[in-house]
Image (cartoon, rainbow, N blue to C red; front, side, top):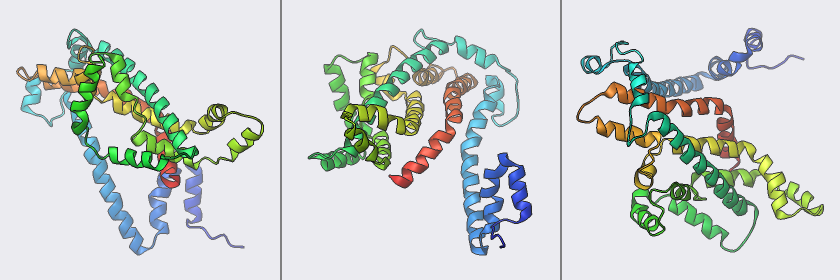
Length: 313
């Protein structure tokens, strides 16, 4: 019986013999070959559009890295030229540069403390809220869900004065606990993502555990949480990346303990009257490295869970 394949024998041999290239091949050459003339044109247009979009993201970052190796004079004369006139001098100077008496290394430690605690409280609050909403029926559940959706439409600037006044009354200004308190909101995108994921997990497992006498907490802790581990990992990584780049919250509520994002903003302000843009760019590259490494390490987990969550949510 003849096998009906989308690819020829040569294509299949190529894909099998080059497993590392299999994904790229199937989504480029294989996709074009299996599509008809009309779809091929559509795929070409989409491919070019995404290629242009990728270049728009890559070129600015490459420009930042390139100019971080220049001295201020070279940067002022030629912003697009290839030059290493300063070498690693800007990176060495960035390590010793101080913002409010704190070096870049100190800003890194502050960021790890603030962001690490923020990720923990975010995961706890969002997991509890999303699991309860997804798996238990109670009066007012639909109303709460609608309030969550509506609240996401309100701009942050609209709630900032009331939020600041509340933090002031609670005595949590310039207090790391206050920042963690702000990060502990159980709703928003993370709630919706985990809500969809918990919704997709069958309740049959819980029913079997209930027959054996398991309590609600044991079902949540020993059954549901392990099954949601990939989604929790994705949310944790995305939350870390978002909080790492957040300078507004530390700016208002933790000004005496600069994080790397806030320190970069303050450095840019301090150098406004004596511009040294290569130094600022070198610091920006150093601030970006942790989230790039984190994203590369968990890229597969993030993309898989975003796709599954989108299909099942």
